[in-house]
Image 1 (cartoon, rainbow, N blue to C red):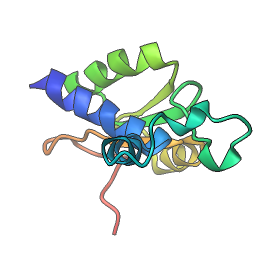
Image 2 (tube, rainbow, N blue to C red):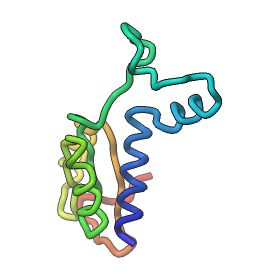
Image 3 (cartoon, one colour):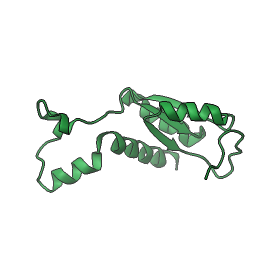
Length: 117
């Protein structure tokens, strides 16, 4: 079950960075015949990438390891917050993060990574 969840998380990260679903919908509706990043000098169509983006992974179990393995080929910088991460460390990680993926199991004890309103 780790693999499909990890792949879904990477899909969501791609969607957050490049608007994958939006581009797909436009291409299927024939309002866009090719991805907008091919257009010359088109800042309006520019998007971010996973390459070089900082991805914060909150939780480092089997699913977290599977996500890291799938993000590495994209060139993402992956930071991991574990149950031992303090609240202050987590705040620092969140400030640096471009994408945040929470993979926190129901049984994960939390010393620093805690429920917040």
